[in-house]
Amino acid sequence: NNNLHTSSHHQPLNCHFTTTATALSASSHDTTTTDQWKYHSSYDDSDEIIHGRYNAVITKTTDLTNRWIGSFDPSSPLDTTTLQRIHTNNNNASSPPIEALKAIQATHRWADKFVRQLNLCPWAGSSLDKEGAICYWALLIDEHDDDGGVVLNKMEEIVREAGVQLTLATSDEEGDGGQIDPSVAISFIVLVPMKRRTNNINSDVLPDFGNFHEFFIDLEDRLLDECDDYWDEVDAADNDNEEDEESNDNTVLANVNSLGCEITIAAFHPKWQFNGSNEQTDGDAIDYEKRTPYPTISIVMSSVIESLMKEREDGGGGGSEDSGTSSALATERIADLNEKTLCAIGRERLKEIFDEEVLGCPMNARADDEMSDE
Image (cartoon, rainbow, N blue to C red; front, side, top):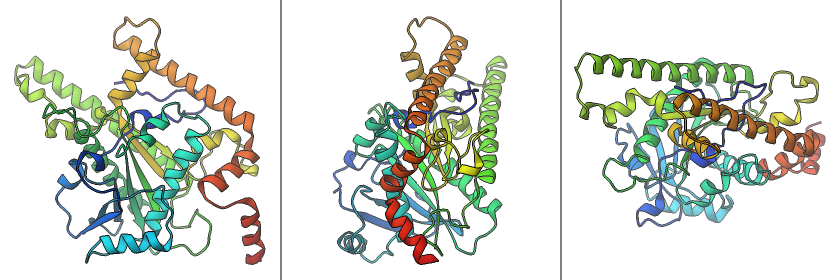
């Protein structure tokens, strides 16, 4: 299998919005677009997600089986009217925590107002403009949950679950074209502090960049190793005549076992810094290619990335080895273009755009907050 990440000095955004991943299309069922949530205790029924009724899942590190599943418009402001509507539509269920809703909104603003507006991913608009193409998984960290290892282990569980849901939601087992078009589907798994003691979005309950990046690299490597192991088993079974063609079809079991082959993940963090970035100035312009309001992992279907890279190739005709080479070259071209774009804008201006458009905190408001803190 091919690692689609570039081997250059930084990784590109991976254009996860074009192939991006997730599980819920409200438009595929005659549901309304108003915010509706269901609270599940001891959750064990994934059909709610697979069948595309909702676009957001919220759970806690303390118990992943308890969760809110809902249809939520992240572009609408969380004013008093909106919050009241969410509470009313919930019937007797508990309302989802406001921290999670704000995190989903901030992630949406990052995708729309930063990635799309700066053209960091040429296909970002396709996912943003397609109803139900983006699914948000918010993992709430309790204020007293200071064991970073446990938090990241829980995040891996959610990443794997979201990956399975994405694979199922974009498959065409029933011959109906799948629930979600894989070319626009994407899932975001976002770590969210349950409570904040300050207005700083980098709450101390969130994993720092170093630990988060190490966790991501380890998870990515294990997924790739699992993919290698899967194909080794398939090859061995074929050679031994122990499996027929049907057993290699895209069944749910095959999807689970081959998850590392099915999905591609990418990591983002509020304090992302590439090697060589200037730590004294809070990083360089290029670091904003991978900066998000919260620690985030995105998931897309690997097959779609491979197809897109092939489409960008002028001469086609080669085997998988040529395809892998062309994918890396195309990915590096995107990275180079992003670097030129971001460096031309400059770190200071990027920070202003990020603060104002994504965090919703203009420079003058930040200055006022700092003065009031003093």
